[in-house]
Image (cartoon, rainbow, N blue to C red; front, side, top):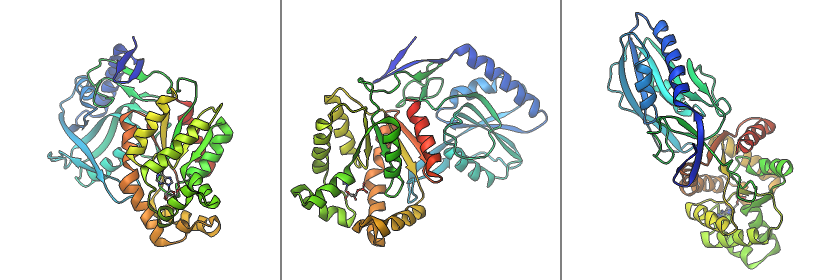
Length: 374
Ligand code: AMP
């Protein structure tokens, strides 16, 4: 039966019996592999608590259980997040550690965890995960036990949450409505720091899906070129790498949405750049009976961003591309004011991160697989 949590609808995906059977099999494999060893199950909170409870009871050798939590805080890297392990009080020296995860998505948190665990000198470290999303995974370390490989879709239940709810559901559900908007449009926010490749990827997306490109940076530059009042107002902010005030940007976007007819949807590029803009966008779209399908973020380290922007500056004629100090300001503004917008969409279950370093077509392939999963 379909269920509703807050504003979202979910349909059954993995039944209780399927979970039970598969966990029993994996438990038997682990029992066999760890006979005579000093096994520690290391659960990653919060999501893994139910999986770990069932898994440990299907492993029939002596073992101990302990838990960690990964906390992230804003840092200075391009993703803005640094991960830390809390709760590793246990002495893991010489133990055979099996990390228990509910889901491995991009694999980023697990990578940090593996790095930090290796400092504690365990005899071995392996991974067991209930769910694994091969399309989203971005690393190449081994995942030793996978109960279920699943498509790149949002899931909830059996320990996994949507906005902290749904962990107590006995089976796993998948987000229902393809997040297509009411009128069958895709409305996508392409997100990332300056130089992440949003413009390049937008052009390809327009061709593939026939979407309307709404780049606030381009719109401002057009006004600037035409010398309009709005252009003059925006100029001083843009040239210094600062954000144009929210009310000005929001009004411009509202006009653009209202005057667009017969569109198959929008790619928002460079907008929303603040949480206030994200809230305003939701409201504007709702007025037209529309909603955002998802945010796709391009993740690129700072040193590569700088190189790319400077390279672009040779031909772009953009004052803000040419000067180290302005580039630094733009990256700082992104980290301080724009990054929280990702959390806004993550909370709605609409956020997807993609590695923005690599061949343009490869990155494009990853973006289209996210869009096709909506
Ligand atoms: P972009 O081409 O997206 O890098 O934008 C160039 C400049 O336009 C930015 O550095 C800002 O000054 C201004 N701008 C573009 N989009 C926005 C926005 N959503 N909010 C505030 N300022 C913006």
